[in-house]
Length: 319
Ligand SMILES: C[S@@+](CC[C@H](N)C(=O)[O-])C[C@H]1O[C@@H](n2cnc3c(N)ncnc32)[C@H](O)[C@@H]1O
Image (cartoon, rainbow, N blue to C red; front, side):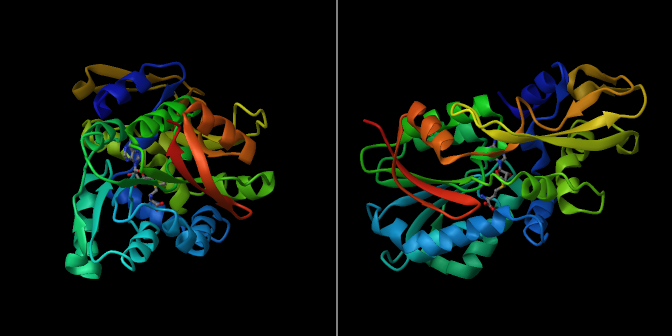
């Protein structure tokens, strides 16, 4: 399903929603990067720490040389920790950054060239997850699929599909390396994700999907008539995970014609426009929940590293 189909499906659902992926244009990724510096936004710093402290161990478990496919690469700053370590063992690294944000990907390629020159053979893939996976399946040779800060963004039912897809893409010597947020402290989570203020980068990132919708689909949804709200849902069941829900609360009845989608969006006063599909986003897992989901996706966890907030999982396909 392309983004227009996905968006139309979301806007015609009950409740109506804007898919998470839509918020990640060039500007969205800029807000995302700014979240790193928010004091209470623990997640990216925790991930960076776990990758930094375990990366030698990670690389010692890899089949080298291997090509790196970086799913939802963003600004690649955390991915560079892996690239730097691989370059200790290989003269060059084949690297395929994958992202839906085409503009950002072009910019990232320029930055990577400045840093690595010819040491990195960059093969950008401006693709959505499933399209990228079908292309990766045609690649012959050892590979590592890297997915940093990606899994938890998507609704729970999509996560299993995505992990199963990754699993079926892996050949015998291939691995995937995936991070997950394992924070369980409710206060810490609520402070990081549910402190809303229109000047904050996390609030701007949540609502960026509306700006992208206005721009790309030529409509004029009035953000001043929508109020950002959210909640944290705790779920410790082994087959679930905890998550955040964020939505825009419509302050009045409003209607917008969206010719490019062949529809009119009407929001009643008090209606919620969810800023993600499915149950939620920014999922938080216990280790048991991760083990359960990975096993269901036929991914065998070879090794895991964890700190208070983040887990890094090195996995193989269950043959
Ligand atoms: C939370 S950011 C993480 C970025 C980077 N991996 C990091 O850890 O800093 C999620 C990334 O996934 C990308 N993304 C979102 N939806 C996607 C999709 N359906 N397919 C591919 N990339 C996607 C976004 O553009 C963004 O770069």
